[in-house]
Image (cartoon, rainbow, N blue to C red; front, side):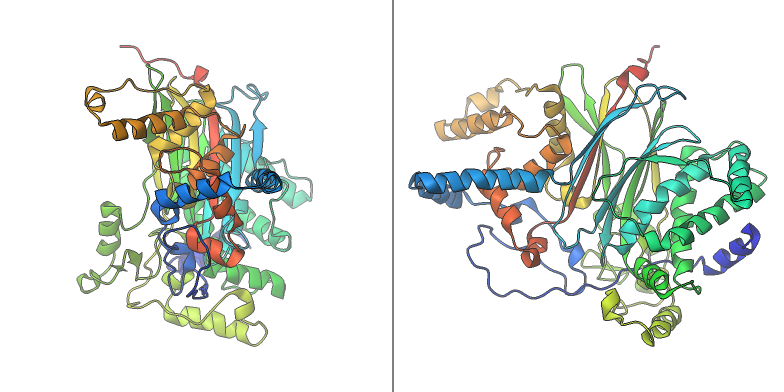
Length: 539
């Protein structure tokens, strides 16, 4: 298919995009011996978007005290069992961790990244989060992404495999794209586009690989047809184009005939599921971040006095973002102003206000029904995690798009690391706390501010509480991997900031059918920057 022909098809399909498949949640009416105050409220249709708050999973002081008293009476054998359980905890927390050192000079230039550390912890079965990391081989810089799936993992999986390719291709100069195309035409090996950094547990859609390559080729054919693409796109333009084009391709693939039933089923699942995404392109000059949804990217900055501060490089696209709320309302008639977002959710259903996929919020009723009806003869909708469902007040679609919000930050010597995390991490940790945890983990120095005049006036009990908090900050880290350290502290931090092993053990011991009600999937990637590249500003 030529680039121009495909472009016309995409233009006709551009008003359609994707929504989430509905996942139902069993309603639990009885919880035995769970040491938590309340479970996470489960939405009747989309369990992946229930609110998560740290206080909902916290031990009360009384519960911690009772546990301490019980432990005093443990036998030696029971004590040994508890210690073995700590080994199990570490195995769970570290099973998906990844540490990659990056050469300072890779033959093409200096790298802005020294190394990165990443980890994931699932609450859903299977995990609906994904992560990606790669070096651009035909252009400059590195790409990192985190992807938070909802309504299943299918969309997050596809986006994690494809989005970095689209971004890298968009940045390539026309001369290199011509070489790629000539290799494809001649049947010769295509020069590699990305150097991927995969974890051994990462999964790929092998059956859909040929489709994904074909669609990527059509994309670069269109770029070759463009008279404005001589030197390739800048990183912000490439990120913007890649997000929008991939979403359009996902939508199109669910509508057109495909070569086999498995490929067609996958395309339908990807389109009806959804995912949010944050992608960072890190070059020697600075960082570009593209965000759609409620993943988040935060920069860790070390101030002159050695303290740490957080600089967010993305804004969450949810109901707490008033500018985002106004953007959504402005796209629909005034009569829908009170129904577009209800109960802090898009149409009362979806928490993120930008996302890949989720065609239930993008396609017309007729198109949705037609696509699903076309499957019913040969495919069981339940087996694909698809259900006949229409959001309420669905009058003027599309209600959702994936247009990323893009920010740029010029690197400075004091910029030390970048944290990319899905909302499961940020539900439990604030920006400043996460940066402090990584900063102190990196430096090994746990700075304590001097006792302030107001603190000197504290009563004895309050002073004791203050000392406990200060002692908790100085406790040594158990993990060499900073992403693992973040996840451990996100789930196991107690009342005074101390690491509470009992709480952490309970959070990790929850059975599969209950875990999602108390915590979300968590993905964290910590990217350490080569701050020596940044020169201090003068004048």
